Image (cartoon, rainbow, N blue to C red):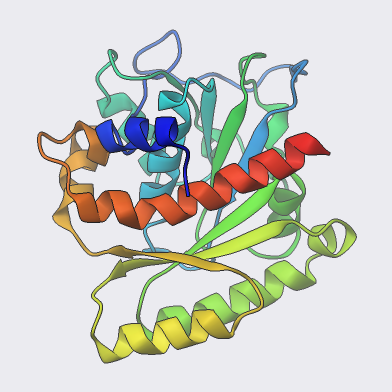
Length: 261
């Protein structure tokens, strides 16, 4: 369970959001690499199939870190640029999150996240990945992360795609040389349906944690349209808080474990 202080912060604001650093509508250009004195925690949110709610998870995780007082950055590799659009829509008065539109500066055979500039004080980085991630690009992303969150939605096509993607992660060069913690989240679920039950059985059959299920709700859509997190809505639903709590606890446990090494 989360500590009382963190639970109170989370209850007031399940995840806060963001402004783009220094300029309101422009993102940093890739220049010389900056080495921080403190190695940031890097969270990879990935699934080879699009439409699984990956960017919603990225933006909400980033806003959670920011509201905890952690200098946070989103590195967006998805050509759709949804995370950067979310940052642009964000009220500048909200908790600050630095944005890097990495998809604008990629070469076909390179995904080097840290050849891009992040503020030297950054302590949390969330990587938003493109659909179709595989091969060397997937391996590079895994190598550049500390742990991995894989969102999956309940459909037969998505279950098959998730099976292949998880296999690719586990067999990747980067994972084989340095295994990372992985967790799966069921996203956009309607419980008590046959397809959700099938997804739940599939996720429970994996040898990796299935940490929570996030319900299908318009709260995410309305918040995202205005560059907000769920916590910014006038009324916050207790169900949302309870659903996010296991994932945030898992993430805090991974961070604690890494920092104790």
